[in-house]
Amino acid sequence: MVVWSTTEIVVFFLVGLMVLFKLWSVWHVANRSKANRSGRLIFLGLISTLTLFGVGAKAYISYQMGI
Image (tube, rainbow, N blue to C red; front, side, top):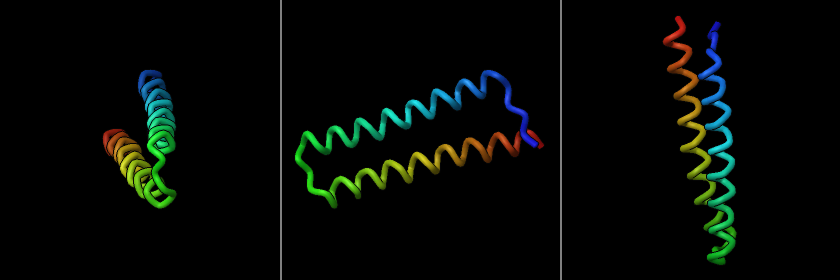
């Protein structure tokens, strides 16, 4: 079992807020630029996939270091 320190929990929470801000800003820019629906979904999907990969990598590395 992974035991996260208080600092790691705070960092994880802040990363979550950063991800939400990133997704909101991408959506906002796409709306302001009048991108079509497929363009918005492709860009948002790319950002979301890369973000999930980064968060998953952080969790995996944290787990491996806890062993």
